[in-house]
Image (cartoon, rainbow over all chains, first blue to last red; front, top):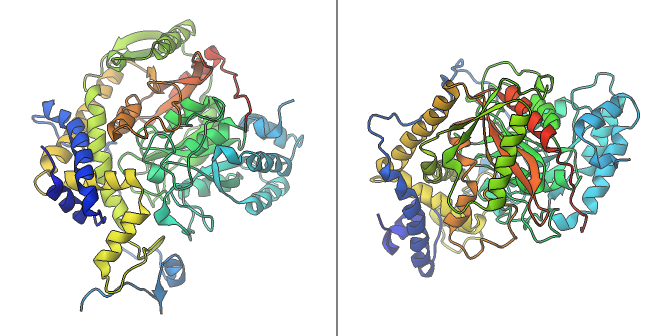
Length: 95
Length: 488
């Protein structure tokens, strides 16, 4: 599989990372090096093998569906780049 | 007499208990050593006032915890309340957690003293601590031009240089064991689930595990005991008892079977690594263990599987760095909306390697490639675990391999190489994370230029006690006592 400049642009967009046009060919080349490396997986016979979901054979625990924590808006907002009146503030989302 | 900051944890603990020394003296010795070691780039945030306060409290306490008065360093990946926790990244500039990670909370509850935060590769992605926003860590060994390894390079350098008695690290693909090997210290990656991941900045959640880095096996056993245990806030943390790891240290390996996997004999293996490996085999035989050749047939697919799974999980985990809730937000231009905010923030907040891995992860998870890459990698991961299970089912107690394919390489060695060259550094350590097993690196020898070299022992799931005991036997046979010549 090979990635061209357009595909690199699409991936950067999906990842929400700005990449300038001039950098796209270099990025595509790096992707291709890495994909060339991971393409070795295609050689492995994985017929009938289950994909691993948990490395230790354990069931995830369940707990009561109740509120266990909360009521600390100041602590939650204390690291926000922009917080106003008890809310996270962001640029305009819809016109 | 050994300087206080050079003591092992066990020695310091015994002298503190005997009131021969105080934690305040011990802590001051470490703080002075840290101040004099700026050139190493090991500590990136210090907390001297907190440290002195904790030391005084430990000296005055009636009840003494397992780590009472012992000064430790903490990898920057752990969230520590009120103390900067940046994961070595620009995107977390200014972040001061309002909470404490479970592992560090347990350490402080055992009486340990927090000296500060330790350097690392950005978001633990790297093998040289050169991708850190703080600048690189320099290995105390080799006169100032060698990497301390990564990602827990700051932890390794700090322990090796006597800046702290022990440190926390984390290991997703070798990030405890490789830097431990490069700096002549001991580092243990526990079984997945042994230590809670709560409050540790997530890289690849199915692989990440915290563990101890210290001067010897006994100190790792002491630290692991304090760090381990079930935590309801991490649903993958194992709800099983924590044994007394230190009590398991007998050094008696008679009757044990040690496996040596033939697939780890890679092409172009440096002669000194090959020799070290044979030496380790001989040492364990001399101690009375039976050493047998074993096969782990899917070994060569471990790195490719890892470089699908780890970036995929990183791509999901790092989606939270959006410039809204914590850390840095980019300057926006007139008219920029929320998408521009995300894209600009993440472009300037993440370094090159992190951006690359997030995008590779996004790609392998995207529609059309999910089965070809991500699902296939997870199937290969199952096969890799089966390889280890088969060897252990044949009666092998531990597996002996080199920790790294070379001694500490020069800083900048991979600056111009393609990223895959750096990934190959993890060839002996990555399979252990994929299989969720415990692994420990023990310093065993030195190369021709005097740089330390380590061997890795891999144990059964949740068999850290037995693994530490085998490592203890290897440590005693190796008798590694060399220390770096001070140049900083």
